[in-house]
Image 1 (cartoon, rainbow, N blue to C red):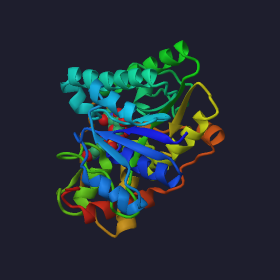
Image 2 (tube, protein in one colour):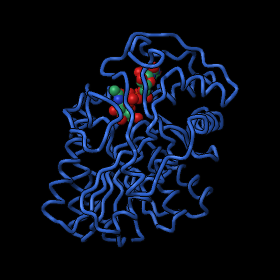
Image 3 (cartoon, rainbow, N blue to C red):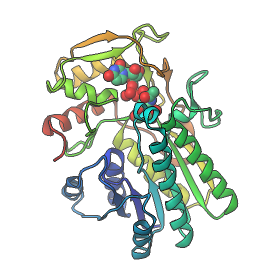
Length: 338
Ligand code: UD1
């Protein structure tokens, strides 16, 4: 396996995966519609790796354009990151979420079929477990009804890929359920660069740290957790990227349909994360306690032993590393990547 099509390859997670692929001797081919990414990320990938991957400004829902990319490149595997990902927005615009996320997967699957491509890794999410009845979460836990349309697209795509693999047992499908990706490239060149005011915790904290936002709102301090604030499994994006390379290697063994949690196996509360951020970067993060956010759960973290055993992969970076790399990126790019 050599040439890997990376959809959404200029995004926060996709760009780190591209770097990791290059560092491991793969040749990524990127498609991205630049909806939530900047073309300058390509220059930064080149600065870091000294290799400029092929890039197409293509929307994965555009079958004709995507087909052309498959025709021009002998693709061995696909890593499908492209998709809409904002939970709140998905509740307001369910049609856009179902159309975009499902359509792109279907287009990719059709192109793979036409070009006899037998390997795909899909960016799924811990959201497919719904409201957990206990933690940690195991891959064998039931996939529940998701609490929002974004999550539902992840559930549906997992299902579609499972059916496709059943119909064609020579297909290899790696479903990766991400917990909470944070951090950035240790160079400070790449990181999370959301459009508008961040929804997720770490990019919000980073914008408070540089004074762009005034104060963090902590959504609830009355959960049944260590200090009352929500607990999540935050994983450094570089560790997450490495999980993809490990999965590609696994797919070379023709395993069929495989599912892995990618997390650290350790829960961290909002307050613990804020304190780790302050300590790692020597900054102060002003915060207030606000009401709980609708749809949030108290605690969510992964059991990661399956990935450790079968992929020989474990998250290596600490929360402090992730806080340092997130801050470094934010400081260097106060207005995001231009
Ligand atoms: C969210 C999504 C999840 C998605 C993931 C992508 C929801 C319900 N879930 O996870 O489906 O896969 O993002 O990374 O949105 N918090 C604050 N103040 C803030 C922001 C967050 O206190 O300004 C708290 C939250 O209440 C939560 C924790 O920080 O306890 C993490 O929140 P967030 O970063 O938004 O991630 P999740 O909600 O876990």
